[in-house]
Image 1 (cartoon, rainbow, N blue to C red):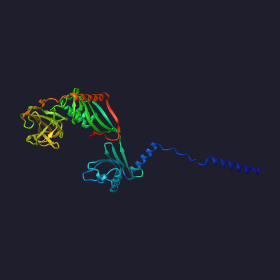
Image 2: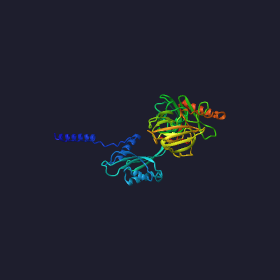
Image 3: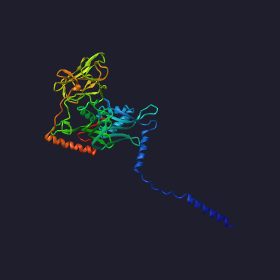
Image 4: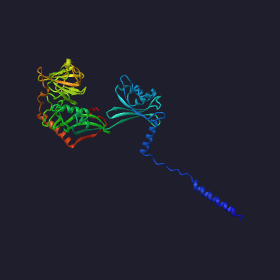
Length: 440
């Protein structure tokens, strides 16, 4: 009895000690798993987002900028609403990769700007991207701590030969553009076919066409350059590109080696027109009585390019009564072409100027006695007006001998590309030589 209380106390103490040992075990240090690339990218994105939307500012919005004449890069950046010291900091950052002072007027760049929520105070530049080449660009962005960081991106490019096929829906040029042909290729094909067809009256919906051309694309799939049209086919009429040995001139021939270039094109417009008045007697739209119409009227949009149907020399480029702005070109074989109601002349067009077949010489307008935008087109033969639709001239030359053999070899190469559905070359670090920047 005397030791029982001590025993119970001892048992209680032992029990408490055991329980404490179970609950308050010493903490064990465990090694954290390493961060994966995805984890790092996620954390970096969150840091950029936090830097890009600081307190008091709204979400960044894209603002395109173009440097104006007489304006510096810093001044152009200031127009986005950022403070002078921030514009200066951006210029200093960009100067590590290029000469900012020599950036020309017209240069474009994209900015991401966060503006104050209350509408008062300076905006903040979150990012800036400037293209420095067909496949290269510089970016300035905020790091996680708000500092500016410069990055350079150089995309690899691939040179490829494309075989593009389709059916006409609307106009030939617009259909080709929708199918992926660069603007220059679509124009070149239309100019080529205009030797054989009236592109407004001879071409029907669902007529099949096929183009073969070179182009350069970036890793992201953006077309940055295009070469010459190698092959064009429409309604069974095919043209092959060929450059005669020792000649700097590029020509197009049919499968037999006959030059497809006629001495006179069918129409002086390539696209976007219709015949609104033919040659012959008609009721004059302004005078109201029947009168001989000594030309063809093509209804077309204001500013549509007018091209020379053949090589020649400009005889007149002046204002002429009801014709408004008038242009007359002298060609070979006693032929002259005339154009009325023009909105303006192409650069350099004046009396005495030589022009080439297919060259843009003027633009459709509505000057003079005109009820709307259209082109009045005349053909003169030895001083007498004749029906332009009735002009027929001989075709070009036919290849023979060594030139014909060289043409057949080039034709066989193009035919192999068509049979294979195209051709791709290895990736290159820069724009391929001989290609010109593509227009969008």
